Length: 196
Image (cartoon, rainbow, N blue to C red):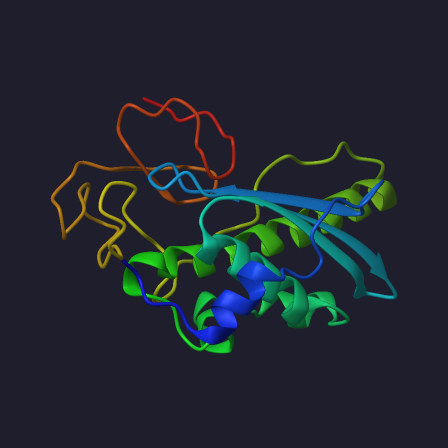
């Protein structure tokens, strides 16, 4: 059984910013097909700052604590500052997460990033008159950001068609770049169709 810090337990038992924003400026959803955690972030933007953030999370205590912490860390920040929140920063703010729960901090940072990207896509579409792009935010993999959907270990070499930890065969989504199982037809991360 994972040992959680007092901070994780506080954010799990008393989560901040839970709920849904009516007519949000941006929405981002992220999930993990292995553990079943699903996070949805809603944002309101004013003068390039996050004026309000709400979230709905279905998942374990760590997932709820991460969502709560991400919302607190991002509130009031500029969009650029909020986009720089990393999974490691979230885990550090929570005084650490067990290794098998670190993926929750990854999901939280990504869901927030997707909400910001959704807002930016809508803003651009309004300015240019072009239709809103449903493409997910670009996913630049850094250390601690790309995990196997089977064993949840970090993927060290994305050029290989398998997980180096469990040797499971993988595909990578052409839209968001995240690993998915070969039989997946729709990316659980960004919703894009997976090409055979």
